[in-house]
Length: 78
Image (cartoon, rainbow, N blue to C red):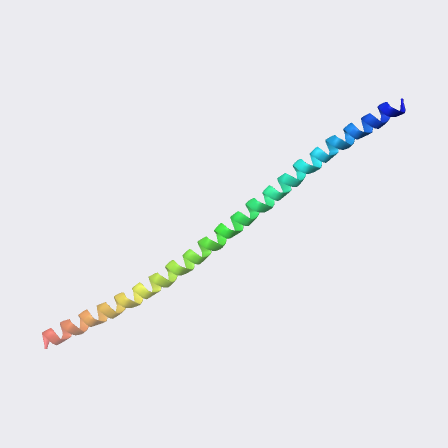
């Protein structure tokens, strides 16, 4: 009787260890996925900022070109 009870306890503990292991893996995977998501978000933000910077530089160059064209037209008309 005692041995049967001991066997039952060992089996239950074994199942609990498996459950704990599965829960641990799920938790670790969730953390990994969260880290990946955060990294992707940071990359997108960095790229977005880089693109905005490039767009501002292009806009300023376009303004300079437009002013130069305007000055050329003014000189031609004189």
